[in-house]
Length: 354
Ligand code: ATP
Image (cartoon, rainbow, N blue to C red):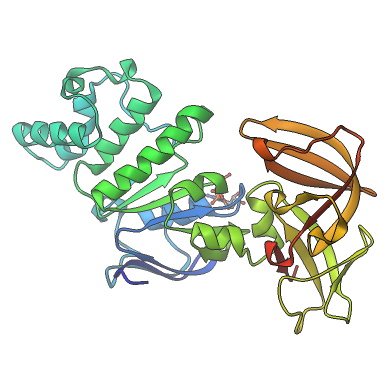
């Protein structure tokens, strides 16, 4: 990491009546980083972020902000700010009053408050005359920006986001994800974001930490998480994947009993006994002959689904259903129930130990 660390977690742990919600997490977040914690419901994301924001006391371990332990510093004394889900704006106040609120409670005088609010409207690409507009008259996307302006008002060093986009419809959410990334870039602040959607995390983050049952099971760039997941759990978290339980066959190849085939592995099998071979749907191809890819399987085209720019196919190989995804211009030219050959090259698969 080239940038200086801003936040360091050392063996951070939280237990509730004997139940460990966050288990000995070590993590360093760099200055200006957009770091996303992703994990399924109950994995400990909210507990993590609540400890970092000062709303929950750690059971053990340390939270270090710029070299100083802040475990016991109360939330309102930390130079951080939380942007809540549903955005928690005051509905009966104006945009300006909402943005100025954190400055008001810090005793900043009205003239200065207004100046800062107008500056933030500009920064978040909201028209200046929104200052006097009621937040109830703002659209979902505008409210998101007002909430961000409010969070940025007193210039916090780190912004925490707890699933701020989860209640917003798909199309707007996609726009706001990109906007949030732009705002991150423009402000240069450190963003710590939590979501259960790895897809959302992929769009915005510099790095992602994947949580499972209170543990941080993998930390990496979106590209690393996508192309080199370290467990079956991480590989499946992004969405549809093809997973073959495999064993080392003793001849440098893998054997899958579920589809009754031998596969060339993506790497040498030193020390590998059994695990899963993962092939993402976009790496499977329809073949005209078995040797057109390093690994191939014969199956039957069972169904197809139009996904806009892509088409997803289900191919049955015995009892196993495999998913193949192609761009529309590379669509399979045939019909349902055709016998098809599908395959992939070894380097396009991922081998994990579980
Ligand atoms: P979600 O995506 O559903 O919000 P999460 O990953 O944020 O889930 P947490 O809310 O951090 O998960 O919860 C982690 C675990 O800790 C859960 O099993 C939860 O029931 C438990 N937990 C959280 N807060 C408390 C509490 N105050 N008392 C007891 N158990 C708690």
